[in-house]
Length: 316
Image 1 (cartoon, helix red, strand yellow):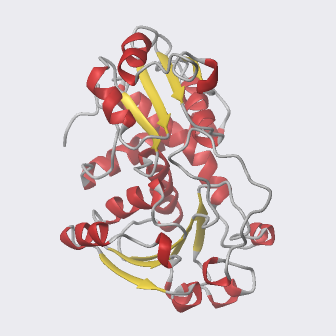
Image 2 (cartoon, rainbow, N blue to C red):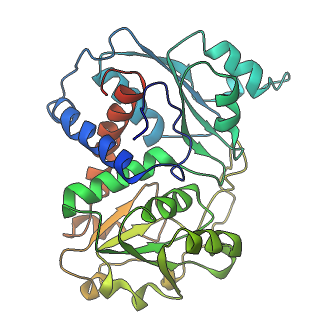
């Protein structure tokens, strides 16, 4: 297994099975600090720099909370419009990163351009963590999702995943790469214009993922152990900011999970959603036995604690 020390976390495509479990073991060790709302001193001499070129609630705050829980420090920007990268100068990623690396020990970047964190990593002398890059990937979110499934199910093997939403999304790319490392059977449900591309399907076949595309959630929900959701009513992830227009679409029934539909689900099926949601997941589902997206949010702090501790050498 490769060492995590000083390593960039850019994609799950190159993660090995044993590397997933090392992150989850570290998360288990650190979870009591978050659960008890206590701070450790593992990273008391380290600083996290955040560079968020796109809006974020959970991802940015989870990274910041994780760093604080480990006794570290945080600085950065959450609105690129207030920086020289977002004003008249449109400062390049190279110039921005060559500056930011002197301000801290690890850089967490979200960007509307696919590949931007990888570009940053070319120029940075400190580790770079991808917090979402356009339609690319979202590795820390999916590590959070898998850790949640592992803690709830006790395994990542022998499970059926039902994936619902826009398959162009970065989370869908990362979860698909991750599933290839485990004994997982996947069902994909999405509008035709948001379905898996032919190139990506070929890549998943080459990586030996067993998957099926279906047209309606109802066709696969009875077989699902994990219901993994994202909206189909989406902003444009290639933009720095995409404001809601005067009208927004409604999610067709094919891609919605309702309380009524869940009567057909397995008793122990769990629902994950990285949030925010639209109408694809009504709020009355929150009170069902299947809901796991709130604990998923808590686990987001724990997993980021593990990643920060590993890449900064506080854990091996």
